[in-house]
Image (cartoon, rainbow, N blue to C red; front, side, top):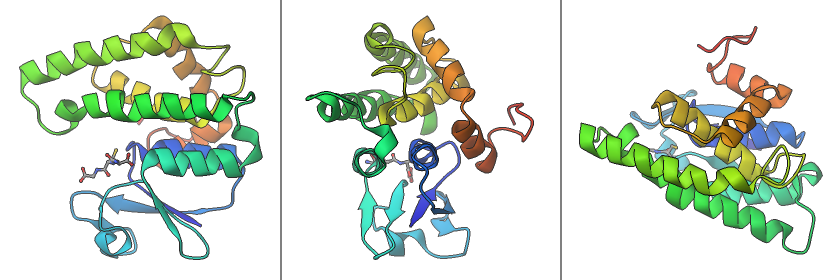
Length: 201
Ligand SMILES: N[C@@H](CCC(=O)N[C@@H](CS)C(=O)NCC(=O)O)C(=O)O
């Protein structure tokens, strides 16, 4: 299978999840401005939606939308499931909050919002993070193992750092724990976000 990604985009969550789950997969970078992939293909021929992540399965089936891709990885790879009758529901609940509320709130930062819009967005994102801060059930959102929701949250925390958004202490600690994970580091090195030895690029 192949993941189409763009460095530091939300597809980093899927990239980390595939590595954490131990899948064998290929990666192809997409330039979101030109719509060209690194092999020169027009990305819109692969997905007319023209955004990442896109996961192309070996049989040619294509999954788009981050929540769907992450849910597929979590339910197919055995190490990422969250126990309990409501385990999957809780993960979907967190993923939906992250994508519709937190990710969406970053729009002014990525898409040239005015100073006022960015300041308002920053305050709103801090409030949204504060909803998640107290709800950690251990080192991660649902206990002592990370879930796919932690991977998506981690990307949002990287974005928060980049745009100097204030985050609550428990989520700063979660970000540090994630950064210590070999699969996370490998994904970040691959995407050019970390140097091999560990320093940020
Ligand atoms: N609804 C999509 C949105 C994904 C999305 O926003 N992807 C961004 C990168 S984080 C993208 O590829 N944007 C393309 C563009 O802005 O042209 C999902 O949840 O997967």
